[in-house]
Image 1: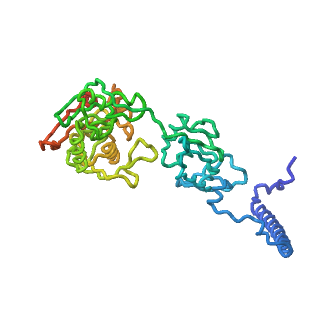
Image 2 (image 1 turned 30 degrees about the horizontal axis):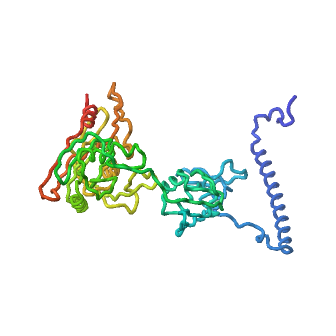
Length: 443
């Protein structure tokens, strides 16, 4: 049976587009007239209501800005084409909490307790501020008592010297506000002692006033914490065994130590046997009257044959074990480098450099080499890979790994602080570094 909407026979090939468009336009016009009439009626009703009632603005919240909508989670946030945050309106509640909402709410500062005196028994008492609700106990105490570091606060808590409402608590305890905190005494780290140990030492030079040692990588210069592990095996312990008498200017933990080398750095280090020599050597270091030259292997080819890095160095506030050149307020540091050899190896390009430092900042050469884009091989802390992978063209090659920094204090030149004699001392690369170089270049 034919449909009622079908055209009569003989006219079924005729186009009906024009008729359809005319009908659609007429329907759209009628719909627009209906909406306009409804809008007019609404405006009239609203006008009448405004003449009889108080202004509705008194009961309405002000229009929120884009930032306020994002902060209060009234809008979803998405990534725009440029990577920026873009708001997209939605009538559904957000599925996940908006992390940016917290940024808009400025959390009140924790009040600093500057004059917190101890009682006769050495106990300091304080009441947790209400603004600290939700904070960890150790984080709150570190902010409220800025003279005590977070590490020292943790030590106090771990030693049971901190009580919360009369009971011991963990560092991670979340505060509710209003608790009574009692702190008994000061942090008591485990005692650190420099003890003579029979550890082999390579003594490059020695007289009655000083000695120059070729320190191996992996040996700490002196004790660095209270654990027994860090109290043993140090250079100081070895010096006490081999030399006996050392200067006392550095204290009981650092007798004889005038300057330091990083644990994973090998090479020459000078130590003082008496206080007079110690002070004179310290002055010489301060006045830059000693010449210290290091040899390092870095990743990649350094384009220039020589150069100088003048970048101030400061503590990295995010990773406290690192130093950085990217933070303001650092200490002046100068490193002069010269290319010894550029290596093309089955593991890629490397550069052997000689570095003469004018200053002696913590991790100076390591930080400066990273800053110019050439990390010291084996220096995982400053961007060097743990495993050095072979090139794709190098078949049957296994990855290489160096369990130390390829950094060696090779030369030390200075005038003897008592006799004025010119001393020029040198330590050749140790076997672990020469062996690594051989492995790296083997065909």
